[in-house]
View 1 (spheres, helix red, strand yellow):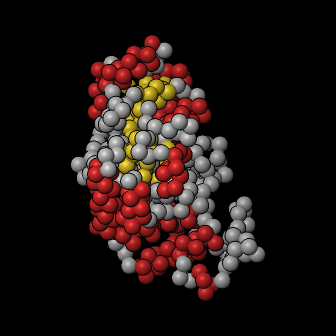
View 2: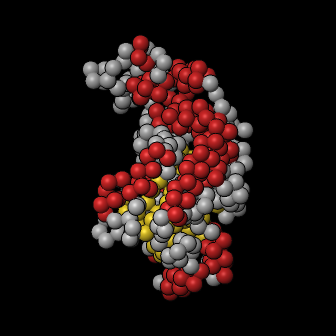
Length: 405
C-alpha cells in the first residue's frame, strides 16, 4: 500500500527533502529555464515563515511539472517534487481505485474539465490511429446529467456527442433512450464510442450503472472505451460505497478523473487524471522537443505545488482517517434527509452521496439566496442542491431546516 498516515513532521521532512532534490534557482546554475522563484519583491521569502510551511515553500520555489512523470523521462530540474506527484498517482490509482501496482499513468491537472478532455482526446486519437477512423465516426456517449465538460470536449475535439436520458425520479440511465441514441448515432456513421460514466454528478450526486452502457453497446456490436468522471465523487464514493465497481478493478474502466479541490479540500486548480499504461502515447506532442520526455498532457506547464498539496492532505489523514471523514459527512447528510422527510420536502439523494438536491416548491428563490443553495439552472430552476462539505455542520443546517416552517 502506498497510502499511509504520516505525522506532521514526517510530512514536512518529506516535502523539504523533495525540494532539495530539485534544482535551486538561487544556489545552482539554472540558466536555460524560462522561469524563476516567485518574485521576492511581491511574495515573501522570509525563512522564518517558510521553514515550517512546506506547501508555501513549494509555491515560492515554483517547480514546473510540465509533462507526465509516470512515463520514462521528465524534466530533471524538478525531479524531487515530481516523485511526490508519482506517489499521488499511485495512491489514487492503486489504493483508492483498486488498480494493480505500477500499471497506471497520470498527472495532476488543472481540474476535472481538463482531465475529462484529456481522456476524450486520448481515446479520439486512439481510434484515429488504430482504427483509421475519422472524426465523425467517433462520438462521446454520456448522460443528460453529465458535466458540461463533455460538451466542451465535443466542441474542442470536433467529435459528436450523444446523451442518454435519465429517469427523473432516481436519475438512473434509460436503457430505452440509450438504444435510441445508439441507433441515431449509427445512422450518422458513428462506429466508435467514448463512454463517460458518472461517479457522482455535480448537480445530483447520482452514479451511473456502467453495465447499462456496456450491454447497450455490446448488443449493437459497437467498440468503445470507458472513462469515469469522478471529479466530484472520486474522493468520496469509493469510501461511502466499498462495493463500487467504478474503479480499475473493472475491466471496462480505462481512465478516471478526480478533483482534489472538491472533497479533498486542496487549492482550486487541482484535478487528477489517471489512465491505464499504454494510452498516454496517443496524446504525446512530439513537437515539444525542448521538454525532456516531451509532453503528453493537455495543459503543459503546471505548478508542482498542487501535487504537493494533495500528497500532504492524503498523508495527514491516511486511509482510516479518510474513511472516518466520509463517515461523518454521510451521517450529517442522513440527518439532513431525515429533516427534509419530516417537512415533506421532495428531494433526490443517492444513498452513498453527500449531495441532496431538492425540487422547487417549498424551496423558493428567496430561501435559496438566503442559504446559498445552487440551482440546476439560473433561469427557471427545477432543483436546488445542498452539498454537505466539511464546513456544512448541523449547526449550519439547522437554520435552513427551521426556515422550512
